[in-house]
Length: 186
Image (cartoon, rainbow, N blue to C red; front, top):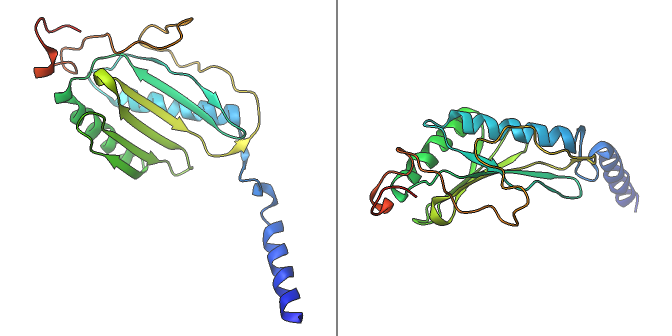
């Protein structure tokens, strides 16, 4: 019985040292700060991509203790260029110290997933018509109000529309390839 009580006391002491993080929240950051860091993560990878991709803001979603920021690429990325984009982003994230967590090599809908050293989960997914989606999911942080992103989109914002349209901006580089079809513009 004495041994059991000692284990209970040790367990209680260990748990009480985690009080600042008992509910899984990072006590040093609130949701707005996490959203701003997410914007920096997204902005930095998009600045790294040359030729430039044109993008718009996707919806920001707020959970109980986390935030998700999104960028929707409006540049049409041909099937022939998707691997180049994924490879460029993969190299940049690795160079930035991110740990790759998953790679989806699907021919039509490839994706890569990584995690930053501070626990932010990042992804690049290719969807229909070659539309790329960048996303950052924050770790659990202190609850706060979350404002809209102040990052300046490089494509129309499509405000008031229920859905963001399929990619509709042609790039001589990113849209190039056999899937362009007759006329070469999408």
